[in-house]
Image (cartoon, rainbow, N blue to C red; front, side, top):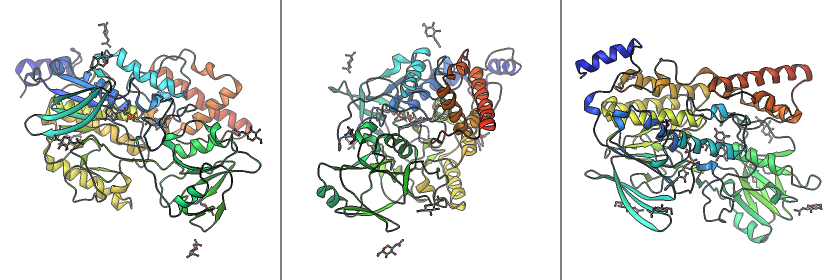
Length: 527
Ligand SMILES: Cc1cc2nc3c(=O)[nH]c(=O)nc-3n(C[C@H](O)[C@H](O)[C@H](O)COP(=O)(O)OP(=O)(O)OC[C@H]3O[C@@H](n4cnc5c(N)ncnc54)[C@H](O)[C@@H]3O)c2cc1C
Ligand SMILES: *[C@@H]1O[C@H](CO)[C@@H](O)[C@H](O)[C@H]1NC(C)=O
Ligand SMILES: *[C@@H]1O[C@H](CO)[C@@H](O)[C@H](O)[C@H]1NC(C)=O
Ligand SMILES: *[C@@H]1O[C@H](CO)[C@@H](O)[C@H](O)[C@H]1NC(C)=O
Ligand SMILES: *[C@@H]1O[C@H](CO)[C@@H](O)[C@H](O)[C@H]1NC(C)=O
Ligand SMILES: *[C@@H]1O[C@H](CO)[C@@H](O)[C@H](O)[C@H]1NC(C)=O
Ligand SMILES: *[C@@H]1O[C@H](CO)[C@@H](O)[C@H](O)[C@H]1NC(C)=O
Ligand SMILES: *[C@@H]1O[C@H](CO)[C@@H](O)[C@H](O)[C@H]1NC(C)=O
């Protein structure tokens, strides 16, 4: 119910005579305790979104973000000496990593990368960008680094109980009303096994290895080795492109093994020049690797099988989440089948019947999407749902929406429980983000941040276009680097609008070059 005073202010705000319509009074003073787990893109974007709520809504809230790493940045924070298997590294980052997307698409709204940042930057620029968000927006006092969450459990009276370990030594417990999990999904490697693999390894002990991309660091290590890379996603392709420079070109090749059946994958990237395509592995013998088409490669000398086989979706510290192979339409208590967490409304809010619908949010689960803007939209949604739970309809109707989304996928021949949180195409990913913001615009009693006040679609058309053009832009960027003229494109770019025109100029220039000289010889790189 609007007070008369507020009604007047809201009318003035709608006429642009006041900057914003204040939130309802009953929401202005209630203390809430909110914990965020993770200081990667998801956690930092969410923290920023929480503090984009009007100050009088959140001023009495306690907001704590925990991360076990010693700095902000999640996967973008290097771990120079990862522990050997079976111990898990905390990031798959390798020294040569550059982004495969232009950085203006990797931002939260209205906070671009710093001037002169190369368009496809090395990883450290991305880490610095995340740290800059925290310091620029004065969020640092809420961020607790070197804090590991060991257990998060929900109790009807005390709500979330977090058992924490600080500085590897101090155990303590904190309580919260709302929990936001942004722990990333490049943490628990998915490691398939094959018949005969153990015997193959034993027969070549000291010379043969099977290693997941989580542990992959330096391509030089594979000089003169026979290398099999499995998987044609971002990790698999990156590893092929890098080790190809080192594996002996005369007597040895890099084998790239993946399922190239386009009917089973929405996107199959083109083969990489210089790598020999193989289908999936069927099994090993003590001296060879056998593929599903019955072709066999005898292995001799140092050989590594690099697994770009992805990650399992797990949140081990979340006691409310159970792990089970059978997640389907009947799954109502929070579960993961390692691909998909159900039931979540819009990949975001847990619909577990033991929890209020705004008690547990997941940020960053969507894949095949631009994470930073998507994470920000998710964070903003959760912030509003925490501030005012009346923005959400009943759990039953949220559940019905989830079911109808899943059935929609199934009708297109996609198993929703295996597809997980992937978006089938850039338009779907854009619609998802726009839908979250449009929902708030239509339903929230609390004003949106100033940069969303004018009612434009959340994902500006340039963001979608730049992702769709990422191959073209990347070819242009690499061509400009080869000619040593890349800085000419960057000079003077400061605002988001400036970066949009940097990309537009580069796109036009690359198209002109290709028209003049034929296509670039530079290989397409993965998205
Ligand atoms: C090799 C690689 C290359 C990539 N390249 C690109 C690219 O070019 N462009 C692009 O857009 N995206 C890229 N991505 C995707 C990238 O993962 C996302 O863009 C995004 O950075 C993920 O952020 P996140 O916050 O979800 O997860 P993360 O970055 O993984 O952050 C999660 C954080 O949670 C913390 N955490 C987890 N568990 C606990 C716990 N129990 N207690 C305390 N803290 C905990 C972790 O320490 C970590 O800091 C790449 C990913 C990888 C792995
Ligand atoms: C951060 O804090 C400083 C000092 O208190 C202040 O001057 C600045 O405006 C704040 N920045 C933001 C983005 O709120
Ligand atoms: C986490 O805490 C809950 C509730 O106290 C407990 O039941 C559960 O066993 C704990 N899990 C772990 C892994 O310690
Ligand atoms: C962890 O270490 C930091 C830096 O030494 C210190 O400021 C902080 O108080 C410690 N935290 C706990 C919970 O012991
Ligand atoms: C790889 O082989 C070449 C040629 O035999 C040799 O010069 C080089 O040192 C080898 N590299 C490594 C890392 O073994
Ligand atoms: C997949 O690989 C096989 C060779 O194993 C080849 O005949 C076929 O054309 C490839 N299909 C696609 C879609 O690349
Ligand atoms: C591979 O060999 C096995 C056993 O000889 C046979 O059953 C199978 O049909 C063959 N597969 C293909 C793809 O040729
Ligand atoms: C507003 O909320 C209702 C009830 O949940 C929902 O059906 C509707 O789609 C929302 N509006 C928008 C624009 O999303």
